[in-house]
Length: 577
Image (cartoon, rainbow, N blue to C red; front, side, top):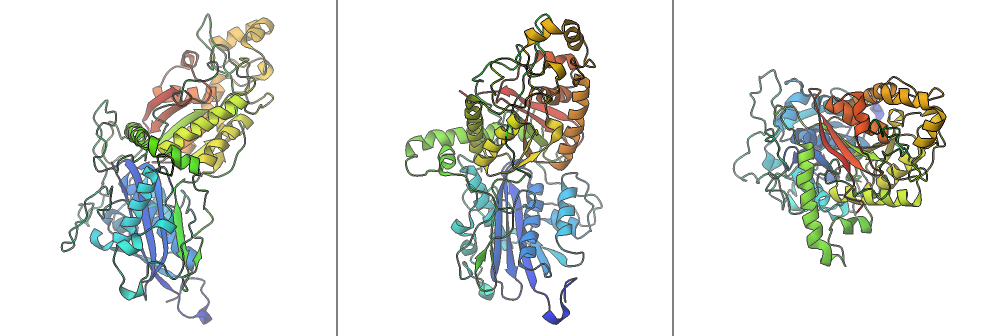
């Protein structure tokens, strides 16, 4: 049997077995996946992939594992045929076409998996969890690494050895050392912990009794079954954290839930040029700023190792990203030499972050099959030279970069987010101050930065670079009109708050669709961030004048599949203290 496009003179195409798994410690909660590619004829391990995903549901992790396994197989031989073996009844039945895919989080992942190989080249088989130990162990390793604030490394993996499946010539090393390269958040997916490894989310299956499928629905049911967690009780703060989660598992702080430290600089309001006014009679203008970009969202913790038939190690794909540096690991309580004195407090902080992050990413009042929300962690850029001067600084002015204080603020944000470990992608406004802030965070998290024009600050027209008092002195009538109506534009043809609101709403819809079920850091400015919050609350435009938003502060909004939204955090500056 040859794959489409294969050379008929080259002989039969290779056949691979892909075993994949994915799970979540909390559902949704800190999650990960594992995937392994085997030679169908010999049983030899050819490639492994694993990734910590942050806070997502079990189903999302399973699909992400499937995609990662298929991509690893394609890297080995794009003309191969593949037999997928998974203990997820849901994924196997949906990908086989016997069950419908109704959940919005599952549809794009299933479509992505279907595109890796041409139709007819991949078949699916359900297996008991006891037969899926290799992928399961990889998923546990990825989640454990995420709990330590690290990325999974194939060089330290023992999953191949731990499974004890040496039949068919399978070897632990393939004759060579493994080389790690990130599979990328866009291609990754996988399995959680069901093998009974330390910190596993589920107990191991009995070796003599095949485990039941995770999804109990009848195979003939037309609607898809669900495996989501029960909705959390109103007001839950994460106190019901999964008791099986590994101590110190810092899997999830999606939004920087615990917050950022008190702003080292003056508040954004009080006439500080953020583009957002203050209360009437002392209504405030707002200020804005930001910096250098990178380019495409990618999950921070993935890794994979690929070996050819001779056992030579090689990269699995182009998505490899830098691993966290030693300082990042120390901040995450990784137990590196010299960190013993702070390891207890680091673990305590990480545990608190997990609880807080679960609150941010919990399904709340929605039905249990709604899945994890798209969570936007909204980061205002650090200070620029204009911020302490309280000058209007929008998208039509000088586009300043960060000051030394602003860069220090960005470093502190980066350290806080690295400790929590849940941001899976970063998207930034195109202005210099936001791109620079995003770049500092991205370097710490091992991610890249996608640029979104819709996140830019309001254009303040002729007011750019002026203080609130200078605008009142020079353009009193225009300022009064602007403070009274969201449709009024700043002098000189700037952008009204109504226009900014429409732009931000359209940007929100695009990003929610693109990052369903994931946690994304949006690095933006005062007016767009306040607008995200205002729209989520259904508040009137004048509410923009009643919010304080500090430089380098964190806010968070979760968006659900039914169109609902929940504000989870606002103007948190605890990390700056």
